[in-house]
Image (cartoon, rainbow, N blue to C red):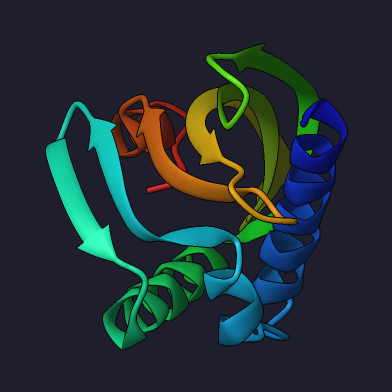
Length: 143
């Protein structure tokens, strides 16, 4: 399972960076996720379905990232904690690089914990837990 989860996040990183370049395939984005998911952050807990609304929300999110100057998202480290033969938590340490007007680019490190399930050939993200993204972006003068 570890190898397939690592490949999932290599794809995740590649898709995210393509989206930052405006070259996003929303079907490829949706393929990363299970049919339903849960997300938790200091803003609360949300549930959703992998449907057209998810694609729309993700497209808006990528547009927002481009608008605030997000240039690149790179995985610094990926640690996998198995739960059973079909589930794990993927602890992903990201480095986000932002372009800023009249200032040097800035890189921000953060971590997201993804819930992953593998029932068939490919693992899927069915949830994630993240920190306060808005506060982090404000702290670094991005927004």
